[in-house]
Image (cartoon, rainbow over all chains, first blue to last red; front, top):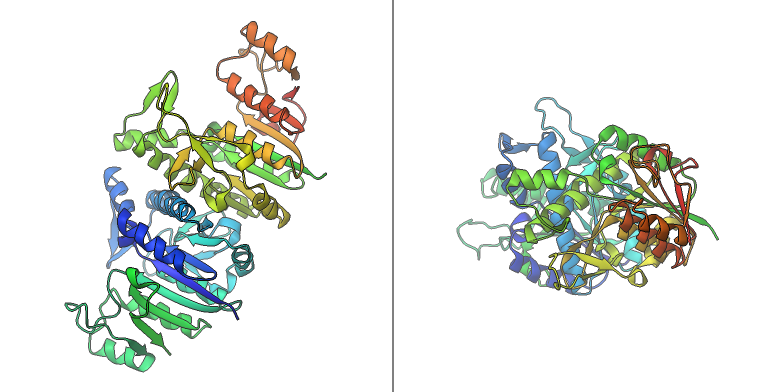
Length: 258
Length: 258
């Protein structure tokens, strides 16, 4: 089975043109077929603020009303996605930007408005992903670049968590490829001491993860990322790693095992 | 040779959700492979105004500075393009939104800054269009939906006139298909009397066009559209028509002939 790298890159890198350029060069150096999923960055919040659109938060999570959906779609599917595609084309990586609506690649279901109505937010079922079309792009040497926007098959676009999008796509592609999922962010991996960059935990299995959570070592922001990672491993993805974006083509970071 | 419809739809339709829905239903009813190219609409100007970005115009033409390019890319490639794709998916048309950067479909050359620097504006050479990839999408039953954003192969996105984009794509595709180019807008065709909607000129050939221009019958806004139409006809496109967006699946409008 051919190896496929599915790489998620967060907003912090997307927001910094120099980091982004360096990251994309490293991403491009990965051999074989690859898929990039990018997050949103702070541009959406910036534009919202400049337009006077209030950011509504419930228990730390953003509520996507109609205006916010428009801004997210403009920023994620428009500026960020096309800037990344143009930058990859420049360095010889034939990329194609996609939202989940394009070619029906990633349909989603709008999250139930109860107990909390998060608005235009979509959850993805990996079984519904159009992995055949994505494979056909990879087979032509094209690198798909996904933004975290999906759709509900009924004409409505939906905002989707980029980590979830990455793990769902990795799960769907694991039927066709030996799939490696890499979450890139601004830390060197999962840290046992958030103050010390050299405290990377090299390997976490599900037992170990339970212990880390009980001891409060894994931070709140890291929990959904690791949950996504284990969901991916238990659904067919062969390897999952969490690492600094500058280490994408190197060893290191935190490897997750069931 | 198989028939391909290449349809350009202007901003006025894009701005009105009801008109857009009706238009897309009619577009979807066209048999066989088809490509849609959409314009920008007033949303870009609206967002620019709300963000306090000054619109610079030189002799009636917009100058695309860095901020304006960002807005255009957000609005055209983001909100408008993905909304159209989601709306087409809803009615069973498997569409895929593209900027010219995606899969290197439509490279462009930044317009010379002399005599007037129009900023990030790109002109397209139809010979450089990746018609092979576009054909492969059509062959899979996918309908490409292009926004008027291109790129310069050197990492920079460019704003491109949507009429020019449509005629360039039609020219490139005419090597693979019997290509019909349809410019849809809010008039019923080229009018001999702009005050009378029933004064549609059914057929214009190049001689007739010269006369209409000399007599001042063709309005300033119509001239680039007709110029694009004749350029397309003399470069391989089989039929070109200018008509109201509601007549796309009917006869009528103005047909152009060399």
